[in-house]
Figure 1 (cartoon, rainbow, N blue to C red):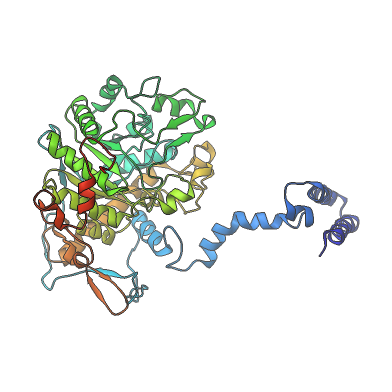
Figure 2 (figure 1 turned 180 degrees about the vertical axis):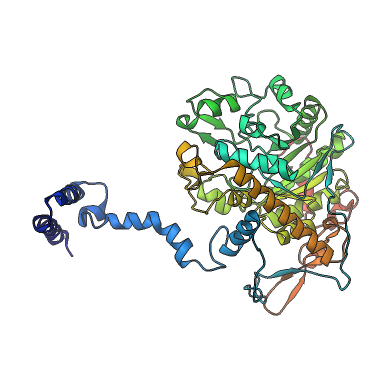
Length: 525
């Protein structure tokens, strides 16, 4: 209907309703609607509202409600992204201590590429020691740390609220696994309950920087030697936005965040895209060795989303050339995570976890370093089956972020970056955080981690193995199409020990190995 006809009819309808209203107090409702309609008709910013006054606003209302209506009314068990309903359901059930089994068989199409499986044994293992952990720390580390099979991945105070950080750390303490601080620093809420901490250092050096934003070794030493901090993690990139820096607007830099990050209150807090403490692979290793000394001998590792393959090989060559070892490497998948990111980066930049994990595993094995340098996987893991897949691809342990957010009550409303998280997880709003009760959610964090790790042990025992670390690529099978499948080691290349040192031209990544230099992240030409 043309606007010239629609608008007078709308005004007449509102006026008539107001006139015939049984009670004059209803004018308090109709008069504001009339004023809104008039405003919509004369404003110049929105075409729909100008052409269809008042009525067009219904569209915005449904756009606000759309994620919730889809989740609660339309969405099927296998629908929903980034996490499907069935994936969220198993997390919620385990966090609450409820029944997590599923009746009537799998809902997956076992002849499609969504199905993959682990090979079980006719003679399952029984009576295995399920208390085993991963010892992290090379011979250059004097305070090695025993890591659990599943831990809390990097989520900063500032991205998450104080209650969420407290609940995660208390749950980590109760369950004896670690809690990664994220690059936002080691806050009072990480310290309060005493759970094991991995302190992540990003390019902003939050919590150990001088007034110019450069790394401050004295401040680092004073905090890193705290007994609660078990390992140090150098963040090179993250899956959500690899190669991209970030800015926390000054309006969000509260007194607490400023004190945690060593930045001025109320001013923009910048996290650069690149580190200033080093610019080459050798410099990075020298800095890592310095961090290890300053921390009192604690393990130091790196976290990265794999991008240009020759850069990973450059780090390997630097370790061989200098003799300096990283204690561990965490591979973050491009599946993203809790950090809000430009759509181009989250959708189109970075290597997914599976390919990235295999590549770094091959680099370590091919250089004969896998026995010394531990390897971890971070990226959308939420179940024992996901942990088992990571183990098959070379991971010694896994980290999860969003899965633990679900244990805190996250409903995947995708409001993390707006400060309007409805469940009080990813917000600094005290009113919204009030809904998150620390003690209750901490117990859910503990239960989910324990149940998921137990499921991993169930899987490895069913495979006839003594531990999850014995799961190999040939145990994992994947569909190529509806008629063919094969084990993962016949789909992807898995390098033999030392092949990059002895016969690099024989491997698929030979050209990247030739491009790699220990003294530069730039490719040799």
